[in-house]
Image (cartoon, rainbow, N blue to C red; front, side):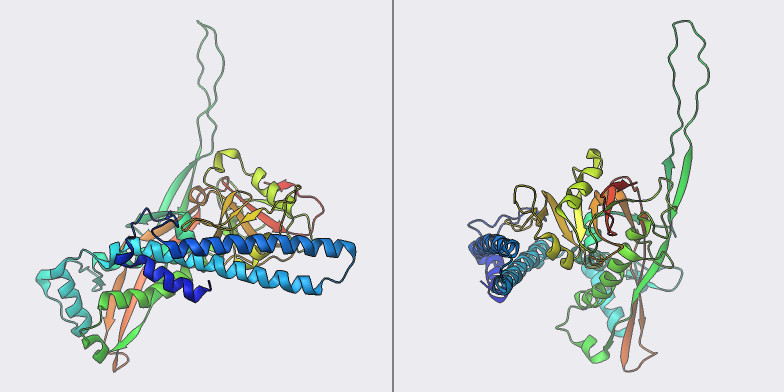
Length: 431
């Protein structure tokens, strides 16, 4: 089954006649309710089995010193097919989650307020009696349901929003206190004097925010078309740009009018001394320009067991292609594809989150993060998305200047580790 056929099957499976019953945002079994999806999962299982068999043959031919061009081409072809099937399942996860979050497309809205919003977007008319969102700066606060729609779509698109902690704030920034320890204790006899002991010390850390914006445009005739759902249309226009900018900043942002990306806090990064607890520890790959199975095992066991319960890997698709071929000492593949719709693939038993903004495998790069992201990175949302309607600047277009203040930074470096490709002979931790 190719990707196009799967999408058609998915649409049929999600139709009302298919009897699809949502079972949670991140877990939907490919059972009798979705036979087409189950067939895709079975196809993926067979493809991965073929990949393992052919890849093993390739390794044996190479070890024997025989020509391996034909078998290498076959392995590459099967590998590409596995990747296509895995991507199809990933797309299914998003579509199923979106269907469940939208409750079949039915949304509860304040009809009176929605009418006022539509009038404002189309003609700039605002009835003061219905203006629930006006502010002192003259901007127009978007309807609550519209704002929530944008946030929901960002969760599906931005991987960091799926796995990190998100904090809504109503002020310009967000501060948190960190306990640096220092409380002392001691043993005493029944009648001995109790002297004063040491007291804990605290250090604050401020998470700043930057402003992310989009400025889509539309003609007045399009806005007058009653067939268009203006709120949904505008959300779709804005969400792509917001998700793109956020995803890049949460991973690599320099902190200047934007979030400080998580990779900036890795040992050797520009923000390694910014957090009171220090930097994110690194584990060396031990191989120049490549990743070994031993490095993955070292990375897992370098993380304290207290944080492994909710730990996951984060890497881009190119890095996934590299780790997919890794085996343990018994010849078992560390990477396993997803056989359940709604569940990600795993590496050495831990979930893998695809993060396109992570770097590729290269010398001195950190292509893999492993840890509990909810305890490690904080995303800050300034409450409310704001919309300014501008019908004057670029006639005949109406501009919709949409802004949102977003911040982010390291919450705690201890639940996170980074794999560094540095060509060192050893694979010891540097924390």
